[in-house]
Image (tube, rainbow, N blue to C red; front, side, top):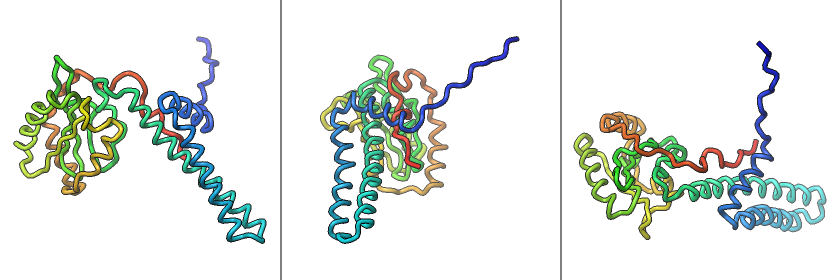
Length: 236
């Protein structure tokens, strides 16, 4: 048997990764260049002004302020690039069946638990209901026009209230309606709900609701950009 002589392909370094993220983001967000320029130039200008005012007669101090401004600008640029890239990624799949599942799988923080698969789905229209559990209670997310997802959400609310009568239940609508929550704002919308459960209670509620899962596999995360691959690398 011939030995395998091919070496495993190395992952690109951080600069290459950041360049690819920037290129992808620029295709969906033309303002990213101006955002990054502002992030870089404003701290540098502030560093120069601070250096002139505070270290006018100290060249070393002036240079130090400028260096701090450059480092701060780079850090801000990385943060902004990561957020705009994530927003661009979700923008690329917005409106597709299963897009909410992508957010719940990749975007939730530790205080929230969600699943990429819907708990209810309309085979005819592909409208779906997703569920997330966190400190704010149970949140049911309707994917599709509000006129069609409202009855589905109400039905799921009744199912949840039957087993968890004392837990708050909230609705979020994601769809074509003017007042719907954009895909990239789902996570921030979850944070607006007042905390009523402890971490232990969140785990208990999530476990209890697992019994309601129907194992529906009609749709999953839509094909296209994977939000996990568009985050800017964190600075060392």
